[in-house]
Image 1 (spheres, helix red, strand yellow):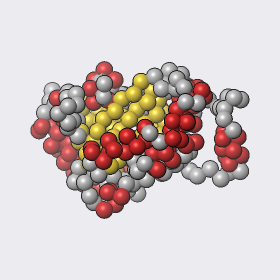
Image 2 (cartoon, one colour; image 1 turned 90 degrees about the vertical axis):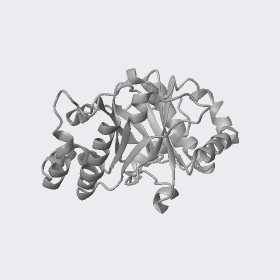
Image 3 (cartoon, one colour; image 1 turned 30 degrees about the vertical axis):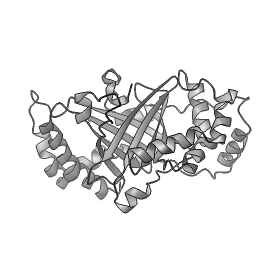
Length: 290
């Protein structure tokens, strides 16, 4: 069942103060493939590229009026304020309706809005709240959003994921359609693992070949990241892009038949690392920067 259809899987509103308590997944075991040793040498040499952080938000909305209010807030208040603070990759998305043959989206989830914010450092993330509170233009533009009474809340919940980019893709890679301002769709996928060790091995699989295979078949991945805070830990999130759904399905077909994927899929080290998968298709708004 897709992420949009899992109302019970609401992820809690993030608390910036919780970031300091985040623990990175356990170190690699002795039986890890040889690639781990090379990665360790790179880190020891101080050559590992800086990995950025992401917040992924979902605004769960009950009606179209509320949706329009949140859209206006994101376009006129939040995105410009983050840009003024130097955060220049802020994506805002609606849920892409499924094809007729696919399972329908729950009405509440169909109204939801998603936002993806890329932070170069964790300090940029923790400073966000105070930065917004000190921005007079933001406060003025956000007033309609915050003026609603308690009895008539704008959103049912604001859910938030906080993530750190993989070593294999330390910085978000914007697809060519974004750069050209062309139509595009995204698939957000969440992979849960049943413990931290199997989650670490699945991340290792991406870092040591699976990301390259996805690039090879033109899946145009946007980001790969470990979920640091949320109910679904241990888990990872990755996002793929394409010009349209038909192209995206062709890319998945090519991926499934790729000989290197078949080789990696059958490796004992990577078996049993994913216990549950959720996904949602997203289409960017006109003002989205992703």
